[in-house]
Length: 164
Length: 420
Image (cartoon, rainbow over all chains, first blue to last red; front, top):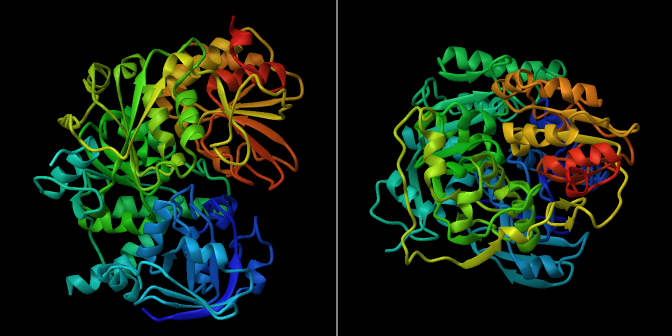
């Protein structure tokens, strides 16, 4: 998995999939259309400001609620490099892996990292480095088979490569 | 090794003697489910991966329920994608307008899901079927695509919380109050990644509709699944309904639980979850909160007993003058039964509208979207910011009794004050 480095967007606990991508936009599976409304109900400026490899940092239970894969898909299509949260809702966690959207759990990092910090993430080692504050934390890196799914671009791509 | 109900079902479907929490397994699926929002994404994934046939066209369920009859052109295109795919792959359980119902009311009603099953659905409320003694969990569209292609899914074996129910519910208190109370106790991530296993002498007083409602909202506590021990009530429900042989899995007496919670059903009162999280629970009689709209329906509370509860409160009465009341029976069978029993007429006479089955307003799709600052009491499952419409609107979650009682007064009302 390729390491990422970017600016931090910071949110609180229980960021639900209804605010990540409101249901009123679920009348299309088009990733770009979904991405254009990403986070709109809690952060109107997110879509305008987000740049490739930027990082979302949040509290507990990120992605709770609906199973809509449209939520991680919208975030991935905004080219977010990684979501770091204190914990993830389980369906979001699964969906993120299945579509190849990198995520990490790390309570301490999410406590300390501030909005706008420049942060570097090494997925192989699980090291999260806050360049702005010169602080570093250790997250549990993904096991290899999960890294492999994300590397191949998601579960279906990895199934295809296994069946070949 | 001693196992919980969930662990036993997972072990059996993975072809293993036993499993332990945290273990990654590949399990065979009895049913795979998707709806008109999640299936189109799954179809894209299925095609992108180069699959041209499904694993088993009798084990796939595609139910058009979120935005049907279609609310707009884009929604119609999504339904069409599901319809075309179902036709091409001869999907046996494809439910279109006229045959459909809200998926989690429909599949148990039709006997498609049964005790001992291992089921995934691309809808978070797939956990509903745990009421039948099945392992059933919500997943995303990619998992659905992989499930349709291979008949399998990967799982991390969950640990469990045991919910020991004792006592008996008081009149006008229902399954909805039980699950709201539990979520209020443990929080929206109180069962994160875990199973909620319901057992104890109290379950014998809970109907199947109560149990379906309770398991339906297990996800609102973050749970991977909710599951009830199979008893005579389950067997009575499955008899003459289940399309396959059911298998009963009982937890080992020495199965390990992370936590045990005991709830005395007789102490529960009508409960309401205030905005904007299901864990913000309060007794229904705590505050006089003015409402603009009432919704009675959804995969949580659109079943026959929910309609009965609403009827019991609303029959021969008039709803408050400045309130809109939307009643949505969850399946065509329930819709028809409401007509046969005279409920539909009573609802209309009381000033309500009655819709054909749809998820509609629950997720802010259509059929009851809220304007700026409007307040709704709803029997649905989520009260997140903007869930039913404008981001300044608010949703209070409650049982059909409480919602119907509130419809009569125009503010959030304890149904016991109306019913007696």
